[in-house]
Image (cartoon, rainbow, N blue to C red; front, side):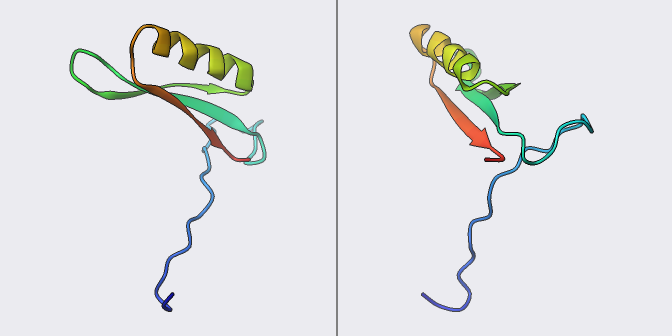
Length: 72
C-alpha cells in the first residue's frame, strides 16, 4: 500500500437533538421505491429489533431493503 491510501472513517449519524451523542448507536433502514426507484431511508431507530422489523416488512412486500448501523 502506498502513502496516499485513505483510511475509511467510522460512519456517524449527526443528531439534531442535543440530548443524544455520537456514542448513541442508531440504525437506519434504506429501501428503494417501486415507482421511481428512489433511495429512501426510515429511522433513525435506537432499537435494533425495531429496525429489523421494519426491514423485514419491506422485504416481505418485495422491496429491496437493508439496515446500516451508525455510531457504534
